[in-house]
Length: 153
Image (cartoon, rainbow, N blue to C red; front, side, top):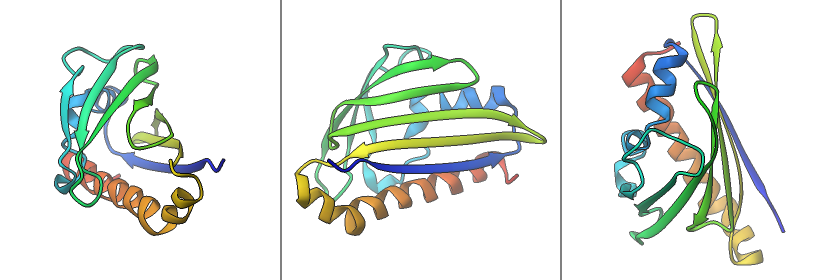
């Protein structure tokens, strides 16, 4: 069983409060996800984030195939961090930690994603040619979008 990790950091010239208000609002996920992924929230984004919150999405990650994705916010400490875990979706495991930390002149946002692919060795073969590049693309887009919204650090 191979578990992969994606670790990203980004600094922005905003306050912890601004970062939290934007990142903890599930509706903003659509803003920072590439349009071609067809990201749409189906339910669960009508309240401020809280531990136990279930959010359902439709996403089109590859080849125009629509996929339902259900995540649960398992941990949430306001202005510090939250964790979302997949309950149903394209991964065998998806555990995404979001940290927000005040730094001189802004905030550091850190994402640590541990994930496992389905389909055993076939999933492992597809990881370097399909899954990892797609995740890198999504986070590049997110970095650029957040800089367009909030400026560069």
